Length: 189
Image 1 (cartoon, one colour):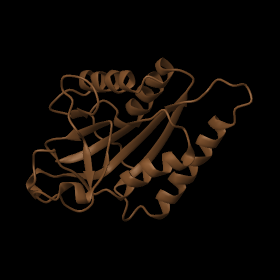
Image 2 (image 1 turned 45 degrees about the horizontal axis):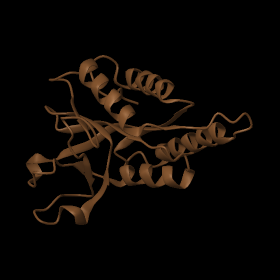
Image 3 (image 1 turned 120 degrees about the vertical axis):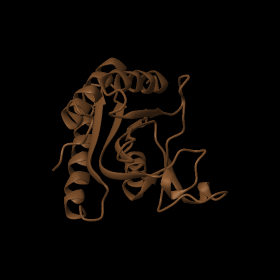
Image 4 (image 1 turned 90 degrees about the vertical axis):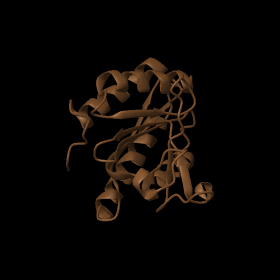
């Protein structure tokens, strides 16, 4: 899987589809606009940022006017359930995103009514049970979110897979359009 190509394609598409002032798009790894998108537990303190940083995501869409994170995307070639749970679990317990060069609470973006999209490719082996395994994992995570929705800042997790990069990009775009509509704001439950 060409992870950086997928990150770049989705970030560019999001920038075109949901341009400012609706959403600002942050992307890690690639591109001239490369910017870390670190998620933190509680707050980020000067010279202590790494202590509370729990995850750096590949793509994040933030609503600058509301100071909230609306969409988190993780692109990963590893479709191992334990690895997926680590990435999703880290995002589920995060509270805020703070730009790497900022430290004050006024610079923080709350993760609120957010959607997370974990995307991966799977092998095209005819007897592969990986697609069904990923569907069960997504269903289970979301059923547990319903139970914990009072304290969870992420309201929906998608685990999407495809046989190749182009199919994966199209599937991610479909999910994002479905969730964010045309105004860039997550649809309420």
